[in-house]
Length: 307
Image 1: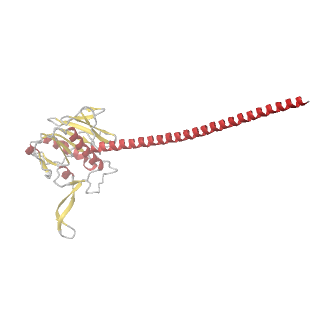
Image 2: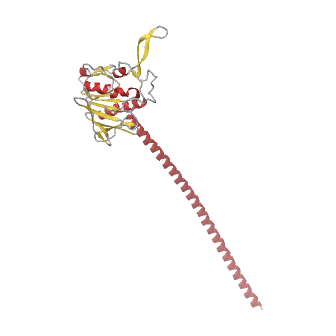
Image 3: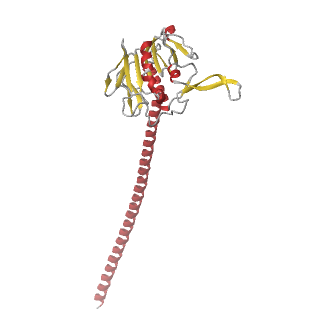
């Protein structure tokens, strides 16, 4: 591997925090001298080979990515009950010389056992399960372990496909690296410029876009989880609300225009009525003038006769 796993020397990742990887409780003695469970920090070796009930310190990006991966793969294989996905679970591959690991995501097929969810360690061979793939999401404090020790030990354990989602990697570097196991080591899987890396057997494309991991079906459809669907529903609801508000505003404007038009019509009707009244008054005035003219002509005629 040629991946640079060194940290920035100018900004070491919480180098003074002994609990940056995580912690576990062990029997000990408290400051008061009383025997009790004492919290101790995890080492990189503890991270590589965890014990049950170890607690890792995970970033929000790590947790969101792992949860999305699990749900997306479960959605993809929802009609295949023999396919099981485990996250942050202690797994004993039952391979001589390889201690149990705690992969972020491990996918099995041929998983027919009635698994007790309260069990802390999963014995792979005892259950007759087949490993399809392991996916690790890097964190700053343990990134080197994912690229180095796990790279070697997963190969020795016979993991057929190993994917590293390098969430803690340097800016501009490839975020999804997928490998196929060969006899000697792991070989990089080909990459599609649009869809990313295709993970055989799991039958999913994985790519990093818009600061998040996106899983896509073999046919090229992005897999939407419950959270994605809820966000989409919220967005659709918001757009519907906005459209309703726009329609309401348009209706209000239309109603106001109708009121204005009705007022204009009323004023026009009143003006028409007033014009009719004016015409009637003018006609009446004309009639009176004509009557006066006739009376005046008759009067003149009588005067002329009198002479």
